[in-house]
Amino acid sequence: MTGLTLTKTRLAAGIWEGELTGAGADTPVLHVTHLGEAVDGVELTHDTTAGVWRVKVPVPSCLIHDGVQTFVISDALGDTLASFALLSGEALAEDIRAEVDLLRAELDLLKRAFRRHCQTTGQG
Picture 1 (cartoon, rainbow, N blue to C red):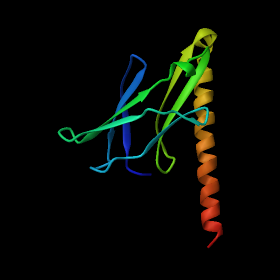
Picture 2 (cartoon, helix red, strand yellow):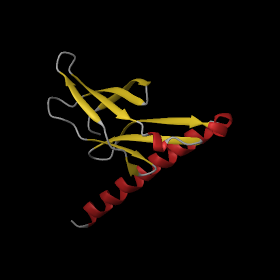
Picture 3 (tube, rainbow, N blue to C red):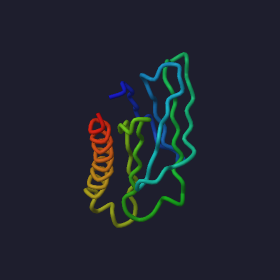
Picture 4 (cartoon, rainbow, N blue to C red):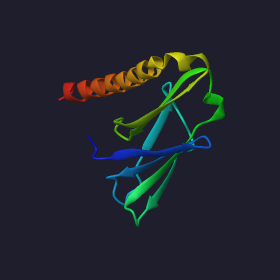
């Protein structure tokens, strides 16, 4: 664990916003993925008065489709800090798909971390 905490503040006008604590003064490295692919345009702004980093993640319109679209926000080590899902079309009637999609994304992150751990400790 990195000690970072990312809390959603709102989703408005296609931009997910949150507050990141525990990063200190150094600019943190965040990765946002959708179906394992990087999402560009993440903005970080340091609010020295509040002692937090303001995070903005634009949701590209090309990634909005019928069904469940899950976005995962992780730190430089690959630890999941937050996630959000967009549901549209027929998937609204079956929102359990959002949970399954999120579980798949988190399982993929765990598998990568476990493989990295095995490679690192196996070379000793």
